[in-house]
Length: 297
Image (cartoon, rainbow, N blue to C red; front, side, top):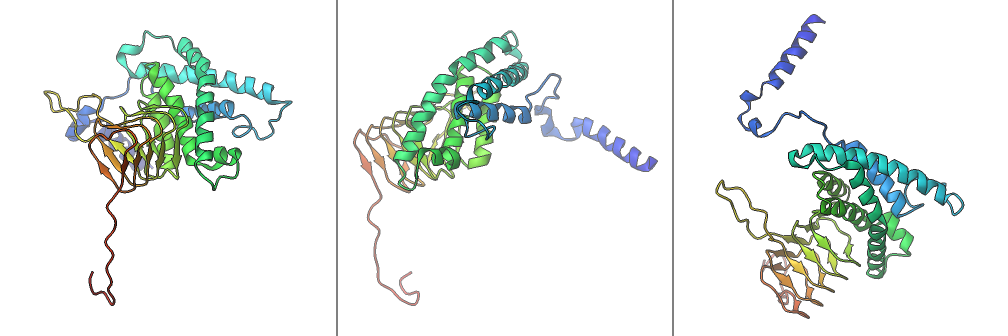
């Protein structure tokens, strides 16, 4: 037993000595509170219960008990949010002067607008998919709605200049759905993603109203401006999609370009130039050839 204890202690000491891993010098040793991923997950469960009462949280909720449950969820959300905002502020040296209680309450005051925006997203997903039987099915089953709940909550927190929590929240949805939306992206109302797997929306994207994306769409950056140390500079570098744009599956739109309103980008398109409103960008017609037994391939 003593040998086991000694071996455990020896490896603890080795792990505490960072000098034997040169790249580890970039990773600071935590000296303050850090955000708790499990508590943030609890926070999001509470937020979903408030934004879509009855669909998340206690299944026993009904018209008679809804107000009671909503008040319970709201008090719990405020408590967890206040706590985790504080850890986020501690994460960033220059943000500690802010009051986590005030920020938590400010976010709570934004929940009605988040709910309104999410209602438009549910309608957009339902209207765009004939396979959807009703709006409740969309809320329960469609990964786009889960991704948008996390995005719209995270975007509000980021707009309040709260560090790190927004990224954790959107990465939770990314892990669960395969939809990667940076909380810094600006997305208008009535936004829908069909299927969703593999969708990527970059930090500086601006997306208008009534925009629809299909699976595998990337709204990314073409290149990065670098500073004197060779590190990327955070400047606008992702696409702008104006109102009523549709982008079909597996298309890639890169750089600070504009896709004009009421445009359609077909599937498997590589787009690095702006297009005018009402454009229709599609591939050339596939070439058809007759062959048999492998001939002609």
